[in-house]
Image 1 (cartoon, rainbow, N blue to C red):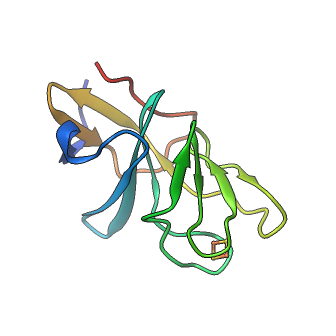
Image 2 (spheres, rainbow, N blue to C red):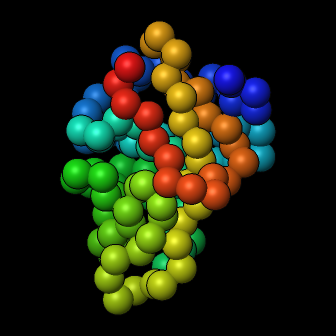
Length: 115
Ligand code: FES
């Protein structure tokens, strides 16, 4: 079922351990390619509200490029001293070469394997 999902990018757009931001309507979504599949999160660090795009992706974590706060891409949980506020996560599906994202925040851990 892909109801509510929109195409955000192509699988080939984002190399492993890289990330890229996309605007889905009013929502600024950061798609991260990890060893465990693709994850979509809000493209905004909850520490000082700067973009997470370009941050280092390691395992299923992203590090904020500004001060290095780490967030779990599966559920948005912050790990570190700088903020205790999680980032939003969005459901992801892979359909062929398409990365589909539902721009409604997820209630449960998200992510999609390479297919
Ligand atoms: S703005 Fe992201 S860690 Fe400070």
